[in-house]
Length: 288
Image 1 (cartoon, one colour):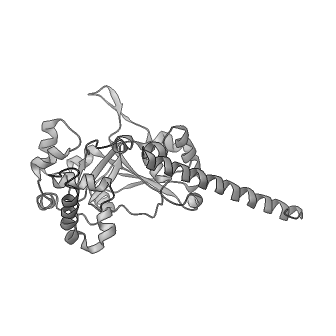
Image 2 (tube, one colour):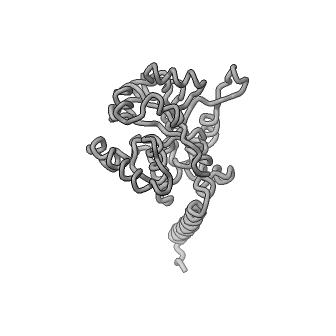
Image 3 (spheres, one colour):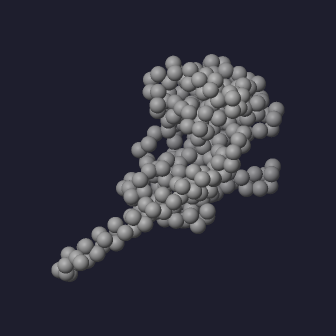
């Protein structure tokens, strides 16, 4: 078993590869079995915000993080399930063991071409990870697979997960190092809907997510996006109306969109100045 790496160097390769869906005979429709995760730098590792922020103390700090969040958020919305605490917390920036994925390859491409200084877009490759939902489900303990089968579902909801694991200890003991549940969050706001969001719940026994995928799966793909086409991807996404304004609906996204517009204009101006300087240097003319 091993993660497959695929280098994509043209926009045609990107669109053809990431938007391909297999024919589902039962549905008589073309459907993709993959979830995607885009990262703006190929060197970035798959890691949760909990491990990133808490390092080696993630297991020690996680219960108090969730407890405090739930306690002070109770006046807004009672959080009765630890999974609900995580989903709401993740949505608002709380460090959790959840990892964001999307069913939309276009949304994944957006995250692979955003989230950093856009003046450095052509300095390094980006990456889109793809995991097979069906394959991930085969790694789950029998009682988890039974819930999915009984519900005729491919992904867990909070209610379904509560039936088999009401707390983190039970979940971690059940999963060990061998399984990861994929969770469909409730549509608590438009952002989750627009981003076509899903989560993977990383058990404490899985310390290295990429190693887990490499050792346990055969259909995981790491698509490496050539740095030379990242701007072309962004422009294509703009035309498809996939940008900060739609990915983050509301005033926050509108503000992000304006900042990107300013940065793009400043970058274009800097490029024109550089081209003028080079032209004048070669011709021997003075720069006015």
